[in-house]
Image (cartoon, rainbow, N blue to C red):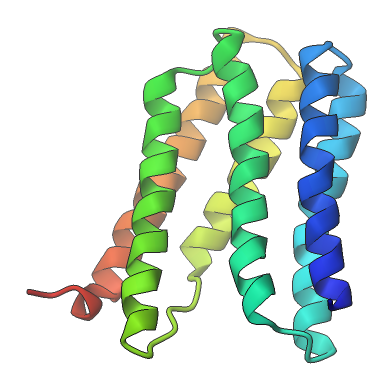
Amino acid sequence: MTTASKITLARVALIPVFMALLLLNYNWAALVVFAIASLTDFVDGYIARHYNQVSDFGKFLDPLADKLLVTAAMLVFVQWGRMPSWMVMIVLTREFAVSGLRMVAASGGKVLAAGWSGKVKTFSTMVGLCIMMVFSFTWLDWLVIAVITVTTVYSGVEYFVKNWEVIKP
């Protein structure tokens, strides 16, 4: 197993720790764990590319780990009534749709690279969730929800527009 994959697995292992801390209202500790887990996404990607450790396992696990981490945070906020379930459904729909598009492309021998809007979406989501862990103001929650929703929808639409030929009837 590569170093990059071990770092990704560490991110997955941090998810229940993060959730437990957040649910127990240790928000600052949860924030630290979430930030470390989020930063491992950049570290494992850098190591994989820089040291030629790109693997099929890593290609599978890395995006899954990101989705699990973000979903864990969002589910806590839904449970607390600070985030609407419809918004989380938009995020999950985009993630499933893009993953499906990637699978269809892969079955045809094509790899779909992540676009900048997806990176902006990921960054905005991570930062927004961090803000919600630290501050509890209704107006700020709704600002974060709006930013996450808009960047999610935009990046999803852009991804399908740019890669329409993969599923074009």
